[in-house]
Length: 248
Image (cartoon, rainbow, N blue to C red; front, side):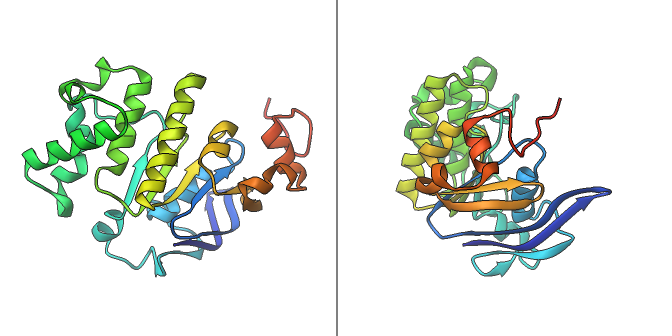
């Protein structure tokens, strides 16, 4: 479904992606791990067409992302942003139905509201939440609203950017379980960026380790602990010593 082939991207003298090769099969969950500043977000933005690679190709379902109709292309995606990224001035249901109220996916407001409430129920939130403002919700509830928004248009591909950031371990577990359940139900193809190893083990079918602008290792999550790569070993066990230098 998603292929990155020798993708390079620099910002001035900062060489972020240095020949990334990655394949994500249809209907599978790929989790990208790696330290801060290694290019994980740039890789996802490149797939979405928000960043144009300097060289290399990215295809989604066989189509070059730089040679496609943008509206139709983006309509295939959903995204759960780090921190939720909800619109403060909009009630919850309008946040969830944001895409259903605009552009090529626009529906009548009553229908969009009904879909929003349905998706809120799916993530464990009751209908009375629909008319609240994001500021009235806890961090965990806001994350659920963000997840409901990500799946509102029944996308084929979903991106999760640090889905458990800022959550306590119990709520992080709830969100991980929800993501796994929903992705399985929808049969969606997903890419996740996370530092949370519990998320990796809960969400991933396959894992890719990105370091210094390249994929160091990729394979099934079941093989991660025995990857035989010192970078992967240091990262997944959180060791201070190893080939990855801690920024001080």
